[in-house]
Length: 145
Image: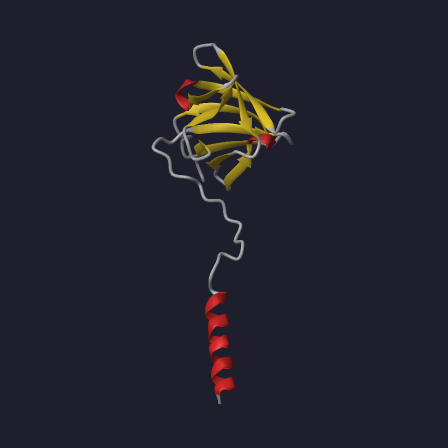
């Protein structure tokens, strides 16, 4: 009798535990930001995609190392960015600013950019990005989409 109660308890506990966790659904969740930016991203394969709700690690600025200092550059100041893989586990982001100046940040290669396109939500590591063109305001809705 005790063995049957023990078995029923174990089966019930196992059944309840099956519903826990996400089972690796693989969905991309776009971080919420205080401002909505649009950008055109080109990955290393040459694929170009227009994105709204664009962010870097859920932020509206890029950050990394500038020499020995920590630095951040707000999206409002950025015209475009070119990415080159470094040898030290970092990606070198050469940022062309709207005022014509250039700054290069060393960014950890596993940091990610996020955005929404008309076909999919995107998450991509900076190591897989070739360049980004910043557009500021969100893209207008396209006819038929």
